[in-house]
Length: 447
Image (cartoon, rainbow, N blue to C red; front, top):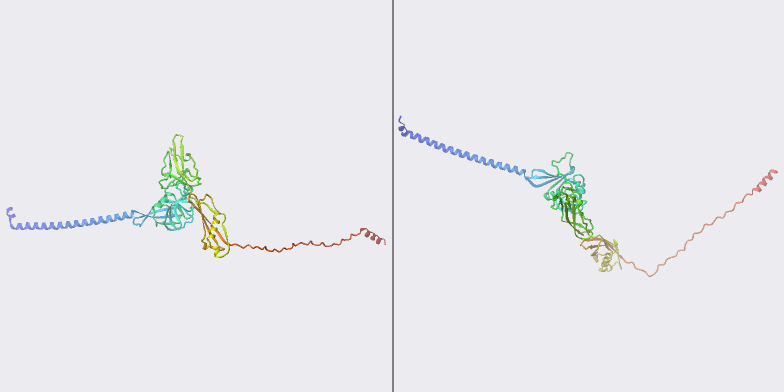
């Protein structure tokens, strides 16, 4: 067979061309199908990826925490529970539990956070980190004896979670009260519940931090001056650089200090120091020192500023004064002279418990003076340190009675003399003659 002649034949050439054309068309179709399939797959993958990312973001959003909180107070458990909302605010999670003391006048119900004050004098003493929840109720620290960080009432602190509080207080440690003060916004919802027997805490409160003797700071207070945050073995640390006390009040010399030996033993009471004259206003320096048996020396100093911010106590010689006028005529009553007389009369009787540098007395205007009515008189005094004390008395206006020259006639009444009762005359009884009777009886017998 002649292969070359067959290949060169026209019929074979036509068949070959046809096959090639078929193959080309098939390739084009196949390529188009593959491109379309690839595009579909890419779109599906992209969609799946987008949907996956969306689902992931949704899950992350629901798991992320917002800055919004909800507070629940359980009276039965003596506990304040903090819940934190998720980003979408659809769920909330319990994040903190605080021990608390609840006021006996505190009612169950829904409240919300309002005004805040760093210090507040209410319900038996001073409190720090005060957060109002409305209706006279407050979330705040334990009681302080004065408005000073180192004057904590230790019995109040130690009773957290155990005893009732006064009024409508919700007492916490300073650290817990500060957390609410700093993190919970105005408008945060607060619910007070009576609680049930089956109620339990899913999260435990933080362990109680024990107090050091002598030191008057709350150990949980986040204040940067808190000596509990500075304690170190073998040192004496202090809180505030300067203590401020009121004149006449003995300083708490050790309340702002913590002294630890090299082995961590408390040695605060062993510090020796000089005392100051707290009856006089001024700034004084107190030096502390102690030498241990091992030769270690401990020393520090403390400034104490004695101030006078107490208003003087004021009173008057009388609580009611009287001003006499000539007549009930307005011309005799409504005068500047009468106003001055009232002021001078009361001012002369003003008394105070300390030296006074200025005294002011004021009363009604002259047109307001009335006969028979008591005019209020206000007294204000100022001491050497600018403190002002005050009191109030009254002054009544009376018409002066006219004096008469004629002596009143007085009828003399005759003295009444009591008559002595007359004695009744009595006739004496005759005594019987016993002898005569005897004789007579004898005669009769003889006859």
